[in-house]
Image (cartoon, rainbow, N blue to C red; front, side, top):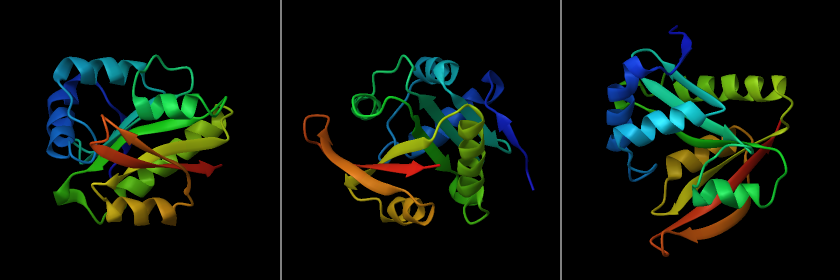
Amino acid sequence: MEEIQPLDPAQASRVLALNNEHAKELSWLDADRLVELAGRAFLARRIGAVDAFLLAFDQDADYDSPNFLWFRSRYPRFVYVDRIVVAPSARGRGHARRLYDDLFQHALRCGHDRVVCEVNREPPNPASDAFHAALGFSEVGLAAIHGGAKTVRYLARVL
């Protein structure tokens, strides 16, 4: 089983490629923004040669995402999963679950009691909906973002 390791600049091009292959579900990044986000992250982890990665922020992060700001306006303390993606060639190996378990453990060690995220409602992402439900996340809100071009479901899991 491949280790979960920190993201570092050596993987930036692979992380960027994987992210942008899934920009519909996540959001498109350029190289500078990726480096900036990884540097601000509460947790930035990968599996393998970027078979999967996760970026998460806590409530104190300097981050302008409308989804992150939605949670910040409602919860005094949380860890926000900004993006998690598994390469198509690595799916079915439990990478996403392992990254989330690693995040849950790290969040608890740091005194957090809640992990939050959003999942697209429109356009729909049924695989992500099912995955998050299986991990114990529940819906805590809805929003239209980017001028109504996208609607999201806000999810939370109490640790």
